[in-house]
Image (tube, rainbow over all chains, first blue to last red; front, side, top):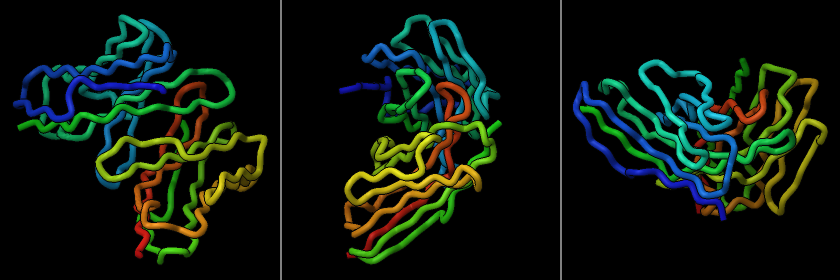
Length: 114
Length: 111
């Protein structure tokens, strides 16, 4: 069974703080993703990584950065948290490859920025 | 980039009825179309997917159809049950690894 874990289920931070969200997968997946989920807006891709130290911007990268130093770990960084970054953050991973590309999601981190 | 539109945003059906959710995509090069189900408070999970060289796929009460010419694909759930109540997301994959998701459909099955 694929396991994707996230460092926190709930997080409360203050405006201006630096925030780290971590994601770990145990299936040797090539691809890892960070999404934010807001009501009525679906899953919006922030960043994804297709290999160690490789990253690509998604649809809404502004205000975020990422780090992938090891294959199993993908971190999302909010350099200076703002209230409009209050959201549910979902990490996902996938094997990669040309045919199918099922994404396996973590449980999510509910971030509140005060 | 790819753009995916999903309709309806909410859907309410009586138990035993069928439910249909439709998605359209913009880029004809998209080649993989998964559907995810997210129950309340849980993570999204894949329920069915279809590749661009297939027109229809079925798994028990769930089926997906793909019309490449019209660039749309649909999820069909027959004999709905209360446990089918969830948010359903469609997605389209253009480039290896990266998928674009629809905004989701909240399905409510009334007993």
